[in-house]
Image (cartoon, rainbow, N blue to C red; front, side):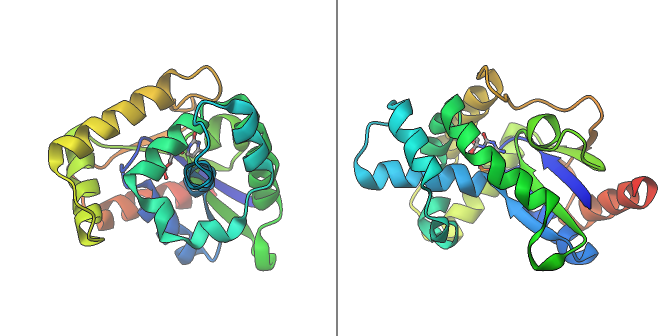
Length: 211
Ligand code: C5P
């Protein structure tokens, strides 16, 4: 089974890259951030206390996977809630098996899997065949995220999105369990000055060299 791990901070372009690589290679794709977002959204909808780690872990263990297709997980509120519950070790443990099973046995008998997240190369799939760490400047990421949110009709502005991204990065990078960090053997792709086509071609070169 071939596994490609793609990690990086919010809105760096890793989702777009991961999806495209998976389609190109005929691999399965798992957006692991969606799992944490779904847990965050479940807590928000239940009106639960976002600091209640025991309840969050219970909800992660019983997660309704249909939520992965719910547009509501894409809101900034769900993203912020996701990064709060993602700091809880019980939540991470509850989601770990599902992610590892996906990598070991991708659906539909596909020959490989691309997973994107924060800790794929460091914790979920430390033996991945190829690891890519995708990043970009804060401002570039905020601009891209703002465009996405406005296109979806959400009412926000650049400063709000930038502040939210920075808060999320800070929380993701400073948590004790599975923090956001570039794996020692990950290849760095900085997308600040590159469009998706250039990034995709750079990733394909890595694939051809590595797999
Ligand atoms: O990538 P996305 O913005 O959808 O992720 C939402 C949140 O989920 C992140 O801010 C992070 O806290 C958490 N996450 C994580 N580990 C992953 C994927 C996402 O902690 N593998």
